[in-house]
Amino acid sequence: MLFGTILFWLPAVASAVSMILLEGGIAAQPRIVPSWFAAALLAQFFCPVYSAGWIAGIVLQTVLALYLTARMKLER
Image (tube, rainbow, N blue to C red):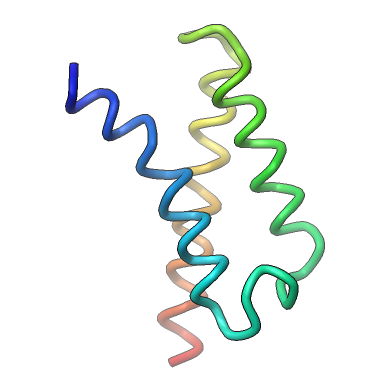
């Protein structure tokens, strides 16, 4: 169960850390990025587990984390 819990938190943590580490921090991100993060976080944590909303939240967080990670690598 610990492995599942880590996978549950990993996209949200990766997205938050990436937004902070990108040049200028969260405030410098296009408005869609923090909004995307907030919407995905709300869906991930407040929808019932294994519901369509919960799955959408995890998918959105994962895609956001991949986008921000790629952006970090391209900016270097």
